[in-house]
Image 1: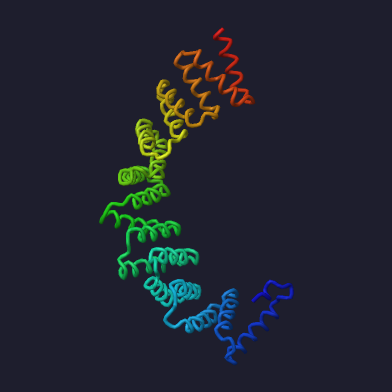
Image 2 (image 1 turned 135 degrees about the horizontal axis):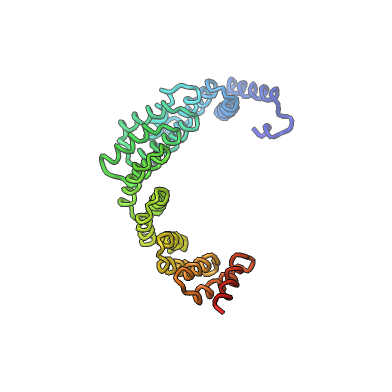
Length: 320
C-alpha cells in the first residue's frame, strides 16, 4: 500500500487497487494479504460492513491463535458499525485470552469513550463485572471513563460500591473529583480527607486536600495539612515550606514564617523571593538589621528587581 503516499494516488486509482485485490482473492493469490489490504482501505472509508467481512477473513487464517488485540480490534469495528452485541462478544473474548486483563479492559474502555458509546459502555461494564468479578482497579478505571463521559451518577455508584466493600483511597479521590465538578465542597472535603487517611504518603491527594482547605478559608486545618505534606514527602520541597510560611504570615506568626522561609532558602538558595519574604517578616518583627541583611541578599540575587532595590535603600536609610 505504498501507493497511497505517491502523488498519483486518487479515488480512481484507489478503486482500481481495490478491484485488483478482489481479483487476487478470487484467484486465491496472496489471499490473506489481499483481505488485510481491503480491510484497511474500507475502514479508512468508514465502510464498516465490508471492513468487518475482510478483517474476519484475515482472522480465519489465524485459526486458534487470535490475540486479545485482534479480538478487541474486531470489537471496535463492530462498535463503529453499531453492532453492539457483536462488539461486546469480541471484547469479552479479548479479555479471556489477554495476558493482562487490566490492560485489555482499559483499552476497551478507551474505545467506548472515543466512539462515544456511553450507554453501551455501562452495559459492557455491568456484563464484565458479572463475568469476571472485576478488581477494584478495573472498576475505578470504568468510573474514570464514565467521569470523562460526564456520567457522574454512574461513576459515583461504582466508586461507592468499592468503598462499601473495602475503603479505597483512589476511589475516594475520584469521588472527590466528582464532588468538585458538582461544586459539593462539603462532600469533597470529607472524601479527599478519607483518601489522605487511607494513603497518607500520596502527595496528589494531600495537595488536593490542601488546595480545598485554602479555598474554603480553613487556614488552621490547611497549615496542619502542610505539616503532614512535609512529614510524608520523600523529597523536601521549598514550595511546601513557602506555602506554610505564607499561612503563618497570614496569621501574623512572623517568627514561624521566618523559620519556614529559611528552610526554603536552604533547599533553593538562589531564589531571591524567599530572601525578600524573610526580610519582610523581620520588618514585622522589628528586627531591621536582619531585614536589611536579607534584602541585600535578595538584591544580589535579582539586581534588576526595582522593588527589592528600593526596599533595601529605604531600610538602609532607616538603619543609619
